[in-house]
Length: 291
Image (cartoon, rainbow, N blue to C red; front, side):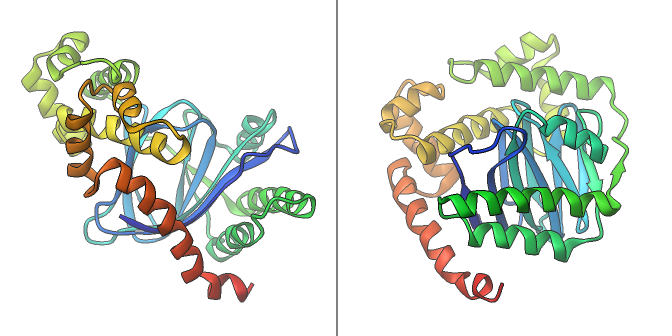
């Protein structure tokens, strides 16, 4: 679980660069998100603690002062450390010039990790975003200026970090992950994944335990439940339809699997999350009021 402040935006007044979401989260030990695919760019910056980020065929061990880029339509997974779980902030954005602006910072598909020493300024910028999230013309212009300010702060001393070496084992994992991403809505099994990658099922298990800290079966289940969680939050689809779209032919089996991962039923989760967001906003009003 995590304690989080989140702002989601749907209106698009600008085209070159625009804010889609932002947030601030204090994570509990081993809290994770994904595997998931996001529709826009996201920059995460770690304020405290440590964690892991998995993208493409690589794993990154990260700590306070560092950050990571999530690219659109790329499957990623990240998890807080068991002993020192991270607190992080993020901004999600899109636009016709978004890729070019990231390139100006030195970030791209091969350079996803960075570090920056201006934690206080980045945090202050995101909290200002959260404080001015109501939809009106003034705030739309103000949020746009804050997004450019976020990039400006990073540009002051951003240090892009080299990616770890890839190897054949990671290529097997990447191929397996791609298969899950494209077929999770079907009734696939771990055997199907291993056959697609052309390796033995037991070897696939060993690779996932070594590199992903979970079994292939857990990865498949996590991906399905993460996709279901996103649909519960952003759509009004009936639970049965969500179950079917995430590879569960029986809604009761889906409800049981969801409860094992999230602790409550899908319908309870949808209602609780709406209440939690309001409660967290109220709890952090004192922080926002001081800005």
